[in-house]
Length: 152
Image (cartoon, rainbow, N blue to C red):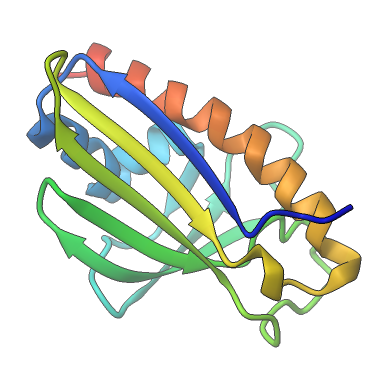
């Protein structure tokens, strides 16, 4: 399989950019819709980690390094995609970049999530990481939408 380098998912959310921004960047709100119990707030240049709470994945710890936080416009971090083998050391792999871009829209906020850098993942993991994260981001943009529109 010739795996693409990027996943791109967009969704129009019936909530203002300020609300969507808070859902993305407040670590407690992020944890609610992403299903992870994060230990600390997001801050550029800092690592944030926490235990996954999604059924079947509770043995895993998610770790992200925040790259950029431009209020109500861009939130980005790097991580190791589909790092589901708790015995594996992924630290030697180049992480992918996840970007959440917000734009005002007629409905409220157009959110575009892009994860790029799959071509740098070792060949034996690349196809599965892309497949799992492509499906994962389809679910997560719906989770963000539901969270931002139903939680004050």
